[in-house]
Amino acid sequence: MNVKPLRDRVLVKPLEETETTKGGIVLPDTAKEKPQRGKVVAVGSGKVKHGQVIPLEVKEGDVIIYEKYGPSEIKVDGEEYLILKEEDILAIIK
Image (cartoon, rainbow, N blue to C red; front, side, top):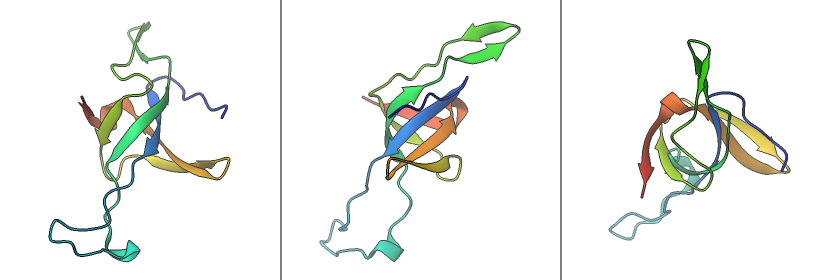
């Protein structure tokens, strides 16, 4: 893949949520919520503030939780990815 996000944007591969509930009920595709977890695939150069570039806190390989309705969906080589701003990232899962 040859996609490089610009500035404070991050390219994320969404991680699929489980298809069954804790009680063992299998959920159909229409009942599933949008995933909010993903793996960072690529990061931009950083946010420009007062003429200086501030590097991003996330890095490639981090698993993150992001805003449900913030990212833009794209397809690259038949795979679905998300592009979102760093400010739409809520947490890094350690």
